[in-house]
Image (cartoon, one colour):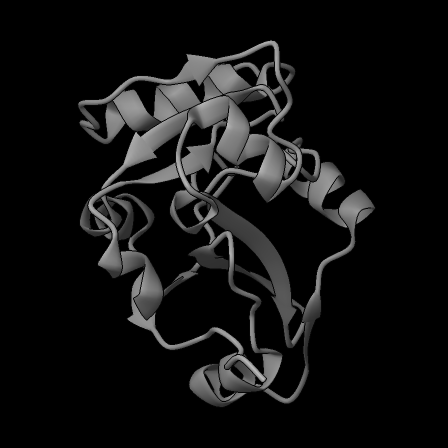
Length: 163
């Protein structure tokens, strides 16, 4: 389970990043980063550079979908990619009970065990994306290539195409 204080989600994310050799820092703000628009204002970056960390249930197993704030995940693409029968969004209560992270502050790292991660191709258009760091008041900048290393994730096309 957790090696760090489970009651302090930002400390857990910080401890993970430190152990992984991440060179950046976590920023905290009084402003909320609950929505992409909130995060964009608080961070001072366009919505495209805000990272969405979504927990999916893929045949009952949690998987992270990491996307640009302006994109939506295509569950059918994830289903095909993972060879799964059923893919759905994890509900907020499950995410909190499993991870201690609340929706609006779900980070890409810092879980009891690192979740398999799918990083959308579109993230790699940006030099840096801004990820939640465990609460809706903490965030950190990370290049997509570094995010891939930190999560052990897979680069993939998982976003819904625009209509």
